[in-house]
Length: 321
Image (tube, rainbow, N blue to C red):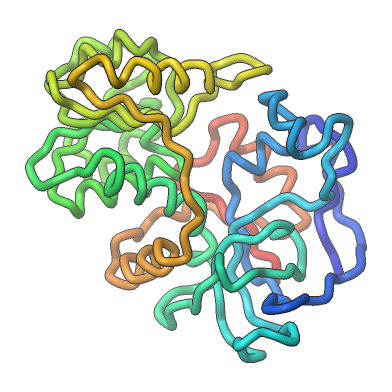
């Protein structure tokens, strides 16, 4: 099969290339999926560069233990394992390693049937970014109608989906992103859009803040919350090459028991039920305009570089076949 192969850490154009490798055989209750589309998310970017460096402890110190990136997929079941209850020809989407390839093996714990109303491209945009956004809004921030929500990093994959979920929940959303992406975020339903390059941290009175790509100090973010507000730190891109912002999340967790505000470090759970819920929401029209760019498999490195350079609004998707 054709796949985008990575044999060392570094920039996309330097370490990723289109090559041939053997297809895997599904074991147990696994299925072999012919991949039609694969989502591009920041997890793939971090595993490509090997930063923050703590990731290397789990994924390989000198080079990645697995050569193919990408974990969001949509496709068709090509072969089933001996214990699988799936059928050849089933359209499925979900989470599995090695999505930047023509085929991958997936576990039934992390894939679900694809709604007939969805395209492969739209389905592939949801599993990781969507689960992260859904759990941040529903489970951690517990957003309710009428609440004021600030979403930092609102134009990215997780952020754009979070804006749509919060708006659908009846929240009044203020978004932080670049001025160039303000019109896109407004179309998603944000009531106000703040340019992150200009002074914006003087705003306050938010019931919840989702910090998806920021690096502001906890004291600054807490001043923007109500006395009983919720801060959910989903991620950060400004925490340095070793910790990558995790230190700020850990500080939030340690401080939270001593203040009235809830300060939460989020680690998304890759729950099958949530992938199904995202499919229902997408069928209802919640995630229109989330996918803004598609790339062929041969240009996966370009897609990752565009993501790293902040070129992409919403989600980018690789069209594999």
